[in-house]
Amino acid sequence: MEVKERIEKLRELMKKNKMDAYIIPSFDSHHSEYVTDYFKCRQWISGFTGSAGTVVITLKEAGLWTDGRYYIQAERELSGSGIILFKMAAPGTPTYTNWLNSTLPKGSTIGFDGNVFTIDMIKEMEETFKIKNISLKMDLDLIGMLWKDRPSLPSSHVFIHETKYCGKSRTEKFNEVRTEMKSKEADYYLLTSLDDIAWLLNIRGNDVPNNPVVMSNVILSLNNCYLFIDDSKITKEVKTELETDGIEIKAYTETADFLKMFNSSDTVLYDSSMTNAYLYNAINHNVTRAEYPNVTSKLKSVKNKTELENLRQCQILDGAAMVKFIKWLKTSPSKEQITEISLSDELEKLRIKNPLCVGTSFDTIAAYKDHAAMMHYKASAKSQYALKNESLLLVDSGGQYFKGTTDITRTIVLGKLTDEEKRDFTLVLKCHIALDTTKFLYGATGSNLDAIARQPVWKYGIDYKCGTGHGVGFFLNVHEGPQRLSPIPNTTILEESMILTNEPGIYRENKHGIRTENMMVVVKDEETEFGQFMKFEAITYCPIDLDGIDKTLLTQDEINWLNNYHKNVYDKLSPYLNEEEKDWLKKETRYV
Image 1: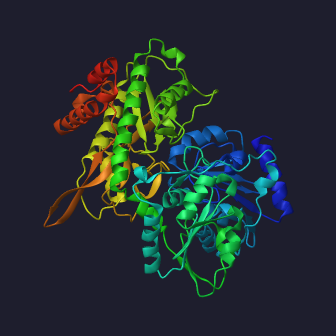
Image 2: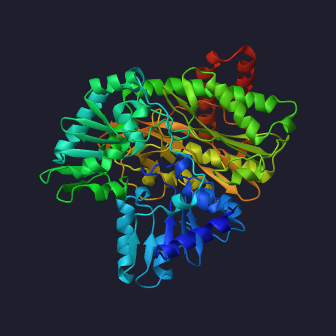
C-alpha cells in the first residue's frame, strides 16, 4: 500500500473502533530514540524516515510533528502524501495535543498503543483534553492490524561487557542504585530504558541498530534482581554469570504479571518519562508509586576512571581511521566514482578493521552539497550524489567499541569554495572554539552554556535549529542524557567526567550544510574564593580542514587554539599511521 492508502485503511479501523483520531509516535515500548524495524510504525504510515516525529491522523486530516533537524527532509518525504508538516518549536506551531484539542469536537475519542506512550505523555494529554471531555483509548495497536508484513521482534544474543572495559561490576552498580532506593524508601525499582539496563547489568546486545542493547525490563529489589527477557537470547554461559550475581531471569512477557503481585505495603520507584502506560497500569493499584528520574541515568552519565581511560584510547583508534578515510577521500584521483553511500561503506570498513570495533554508533550521515542542509540526511540509491572536485562534504559518523562510543563530524573541502561557504565554515569553527574554551562555575547546566557557542553566528543573524551538543554513552547509545547543550531549559548540572559533544553548524537549504563536532569531557579547572571552576577537554582527534578557513575572520586566540589542537592531533595519531599517512597528516595539521 502507498501512504495515502494506508491512511485511509487506518481511518476505516478508527471508525470501526469509534476513534476520532489516532496517534503514532516514533518510540518502542522502552521509549528508545532509535528503534528496531518492528516499531517503525510512524515511518510505515507516513513515509517519513527521520528518527524523531509524531504522526496524528484524524478522520479528515493528517499531520507530522518533527524538530528542526528534519524540516527539509520531512517536507520532501511527505510530498504528495496529504500529511501536513508541523515544525516543532517554530513560532506559532501548536503541539499535536493542542492541535487535536482545537480540532476535535467535545466528547471525542483519541486512540493509540499504550505500549509506546509513557506515563508523562498520558498525563499531558489528559490535562490538555479534560476541558473538552476527550477520552483516551490506549489498548489497540491499529498499525499492527494493518501492517501485514511487519518485521518480527529481534532475537539477538546477549553478551557480557567485561569490567576491564566498563570499570565497575554489576554488584557495585546494584549497591549504588539500592542506596538511592533506600533514600527514597523504595522496595522495588522498575527499569525499562534499554541503555540503563545494559549499563546496570554489564550486558550488551544487538536488538536495536547501532545501539548495543537488548529488549528487556528489570525490577530491582533491595535483595534481588529480576531480568525480564526472551530466554532464547541468553546463552548458558551468560545465564551462569548473571545468576552468580543474583539475577533471576524471567520471560519478557511476564513483566506485567510480576508488577501485579506487589504487596500493598510496597513502594515501587520508576521514571514516569520512560515507563510505558501498559506497565504502569499493570502495577498493583494498592502499591505506593514513587516517580523519580532514572537513578541509573545520572550514575552512568558520570564516567568512571576506567571508562575515561578506555574512551581516550578508543578516540585515538577512531581518529586514526578517520584520518585514513579523509586522506583517501581528498587524494582520490576520480571523485566521480565515489558516492555518498560508497564513502560511508569505506569509512565503516576502516573502523571495523580494529578488533575492538563492533560497528557504527549510528547510520553515517554522508551529505554532499545541499544534502548537508538536512541535518540528519541519509543517502539512498535514488537520492545519493557522486562527488566532484568542488564544494563541501559533511560526514557525521561514529563507532561502537568495547572501549567506548564515538561521534565525530567533519566538513571536508573537495574543491574551490564560494565566499559564503568559506565564511560559514569559519563561523562554525569560531562557535566550536568558543564552547571548547569556555570556563564556567560549577553548577552551570548545558542550557546556560549553549548561547556561548551561538554567539559567533548570532552576530551575523544566523542560527541552527538544534542543540549544540548531547551526552554520549559508553559502548551504549550515541545520544545519552540527562546532560545536553541546548537552549531548551535543562536542570542537569555539568559534573566532572560527563561526556558531551560540541557540534555547532550552519545549514542553508538548497546550498550547503556545515558542522564541526568533537567529543569532550567535563574536567575541573581552578578553585577560587568564588567557587570551583570547570572547563572542557576535547578528546576527539581529527584535523579540521584548513582549506575551508578564512583566517581573517579568526582572532589570534582562535588561531592559537587551532594550532594547538592540530599539534595534539598529530602527536596522538601519528604512531598509528604509516609514513605516507603521517606526511599527509603533517600537512593537514600545519600551523596557520
